Image (tube, rainbow, N blue to C red; front, top):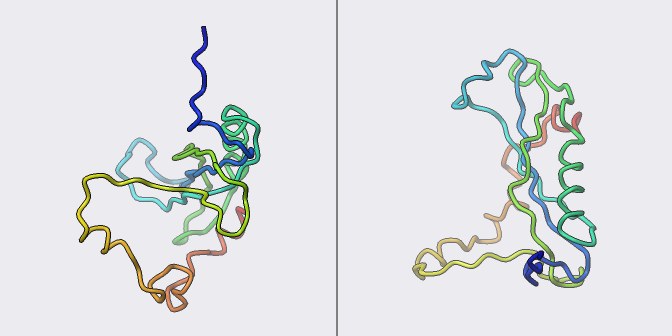
Length: 144
């Protein structure tokens, strides 16, 4: 007999949030060395699906879209994007609208000091980092 799917693993409105993991791999890398450095992306996407199985299939398919796209040169070397898999797949429990909660994280046994340290001033928030280098490169634009 199949176990019922817990409510926490269902999306009442059919929306899911997936984190897709991709990395850039140079063609001339030693692929046997797992400690080599790379550029990686964790892309968070919305998925419309009736259940977690469909959401999983769609997230995997979405992640594979850029796989094999030849890009570069990054640092003067040609390479391509590799889809590694999913880091997260979560149901969205609320109807999507302004202010809808789409993700949450619970921390237990955490100090107040640590909680306070996680809060950023407006100018420290990512979307206000106008002086920071743009992380979107021509290689990134090509693969999208």
